[in-house]
Length: 294
Image (cartoon, rainbow, N blue to C red; front, side):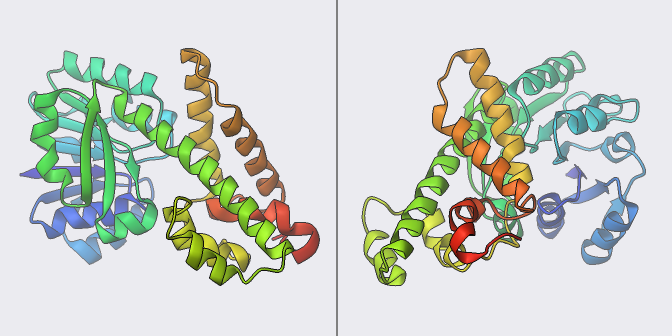
């Protein structure tokens, strides 16, 4: 089976590598040719100068880029993937983007007899590098079944949520939940420090109860130490929360906490933390006493 992968960022680079390791033929495209060349040196395969060239003859085309505009450019643009994809092939968009765009791409692809899935990811860079991503999918059942075995190359869980756009909507739920968890964890750790508690003992106790979360298990120590130079960047989180908040305006959902946490992330950006991990919410609480200011 021939595949194409468009976008070799911190997620796409290792994901495309897993496809190659599974024996799939992979043609890659990246805006920076240097990155594509580095991928070829590590994984073999071939590269293309445009998304259309990469997608030509591919059974499944994967896309993992920055935002709605980027997705439109690499799929619908003059040199976009849909300009060359064959009838019966499948386009899978792993970008976290809007549900509106997903529905648009589903319709345009359908007119060309190409299947489309919106399939945003959860698990971050570590999940991509370890091939342990969670994928939330929107689209048609038959298209999903064709693409699922290929996506299993880098995923631990793949769920078809519903029709086109449902994957993106599920990713919004994911980010809404993470934002609230991280704010609660930030306040809890901040409180524990001010109360002069042994934080390691506190976490050891409460992480075995109802307060347990992935963020608590994997981020509490770096949060306490003011270490944020890794992980899922605040800039990316604000992009994702912005998509969720815009969708909430359309569907009438009330996201008061999400709006608040988004503003807190803006404060972190003002501290110089645009590229800090999302756990850096604690920095705005600790700044007066710890000097965590970038």
